[in-house]
Amino acid sequence: MLTGGLIADGDRLEKVVKRLVAEIGKVNPQAAAMVKFDAQTYNGVRFHVVKAPIEKEDQIAALGEQIELVLGLSDSRFYFAAGRDAAKLLKDAIDKSKYAKDVPPFQMVLAGEPLAKFTAEVPKDNPLAGKAAETLKKSGKDCLTLTASPVPNGMKVRLEIQEGLLKLLVNFNQMQKPATPPQINSGVN
Image (cartoon, rainbow, N blue to C red; front, side, top):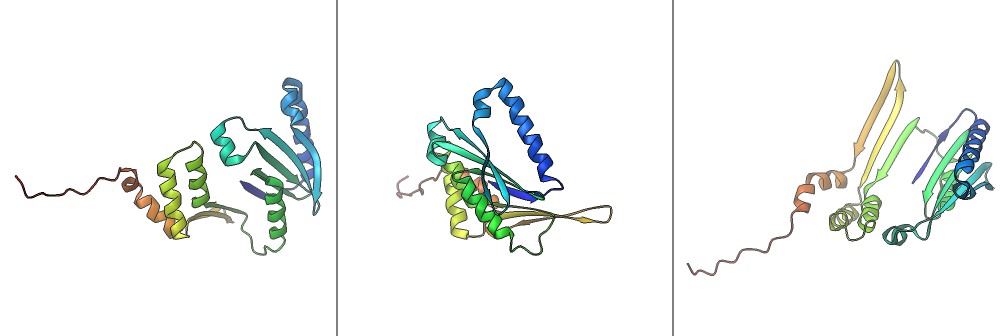
């Protein structure tokens, strides 16, 4: 998972986050100890990292022994990543954001195949999610995009659903039915 955006005062947000973790530390010192402030700086963005152990076996298979949460802050930007090797994911996003020119104020892109694949693995043996992941992989067009931009006295919202995801939604009921063997007529009554 990855998100980011522009903020008015990154230093102020950083102070709030540090105070919040200090308060959590008063109640749960172990939880606060998982937080490492200023773990690294990348292109002017300060990384604050949480690494939490994962205990359930089916989640370990999908995520690894621990989950990494990274909050990246600068004076005017924030980033948040969660998952396996979240810091690397965040660095890639920071690098790519340098070249973005015309970016809407809000845009969310959800890729269906990785989500279905993850759902097939956690919890284990989810055949319906496995079928969905395979269907979306074949289509290659599995994204849902939500974009919002301001207009006078309101907001314009656009929802785009790619072809593969639409086909999956249309055929979802069919996927839930177990395969039935064809009926063979022996000719004997």
